[in-house]
Image 1 (cartoon, rainbow, N blue to C red):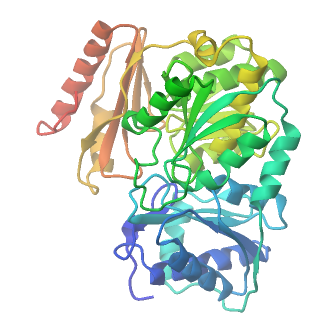
Image 2: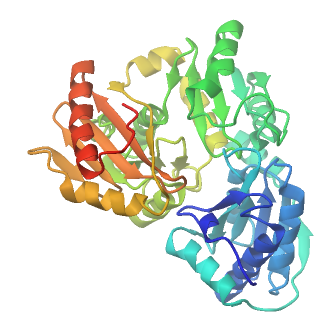
Length: 458
């Protein structure tokens, strides 16, 4: 292949603008590498799925043809959420899968999340795909294409495992993403009264962007939960692997606080278990996990990096601030927002308290959402290195596993380089507004000492 845009090869996945940085030709070549990797691992087939994006049919055809050209067989799942792709890879004969999805990106994006022989590809392994394409380094053969219907098996499996103690009233907002093809049916089979918001799959995303990490995308869900007097509201991103939660009162529960409630339930059955969370999560998590007889492990942001760490330390549960939740107890350890929603419903159905009351007992602080500083893509890594080198916050704890997180006695601040966009990401948390401002001022001085012309969002 003459040329391929290197920018699409990210830390966690491959992602680009359809027809510009991501083309049918490039996806075909990526398929050739993936098929070769499967065969080189001693396997012979790979499961393939796609989300509801308009570019999906043409790109998945190119992907499948690329894989087949290596002699690797393709099991086509059709249009499914990303968690069902992972599920199919675990329960079918193959342990490899590739999902064609743009996740929560705008409708003109698409990309690939990849798992080979049970291992989610990340960082150097993803960059290696680029180099193999440039070198025309792939096998040649003639694979076989078959199809597999996985949705009903997935639903049946979960309904068999979970019986809700009482019926719940649930609002589901799928943002016109592919979760709409599974979640409403699943929750109804669990006995819930389901109110659907934007559950028809539409790759144009005409109502709001399918990203539950943004408060503006949860407004319809908040309104509908209150209007219908529902027990809980669940929001899913474009490919169904990230969860947003709204209580019966209409309060948003961000993923780090969701993780505390899930930790409490898991540790009640598995004391001593390891629980992983990313550097963007609340400082309350570590203490909460220890108080409930678990072992907290802070790690780098990124679904593939969290998955790898979970496998390494045999964590029972993991989560990150973006909304990816990974259950290893009673499930397979991959990020699955639909399954996480079921686990939340099980906790709610078993409890005497309302959803709001349950989360009242979960610690909270004054905090900021993710704040972003736009920087040049080629500069962000070197800039981050300079920031870490110049940081000196006296007696505070400096954590540099992913950027710089500084833990003070009464709060913390984080700055890290985004792995998906040309920006630096910041987040702050403190016991009071006054402390929050003090921590932000300290970070302001550091950032402007490194590069005075930075435009800061705080």
